[in-house]
Image (tube, rainbow, N blue to C red):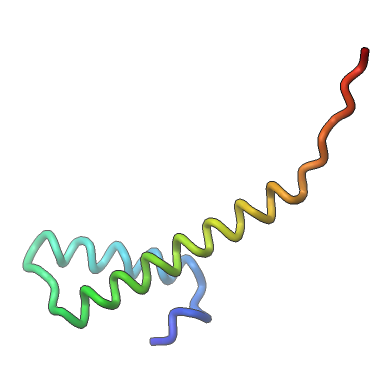
Length: 64
C-alpha cells in the first residue's frame, strides 16, 4: 500500500496492528520495514501539523 497518500487515521490503525502483532508473535523483516515507514509517515505528519499551527500564531503586543 502507498502510505504517502493514505489518511493518517489509516496509518495509525496499521501501526497499531503491527505493534500488537509484534508483541504476540513477532514481525517479519518486511513488516518491520513497513512499521518504520508508517512511523516516519506519522511523525512527519505530526511535525507538519504542529509547524502549521505555530506559523499561524501571531504574538500579542505587550502593553506598557
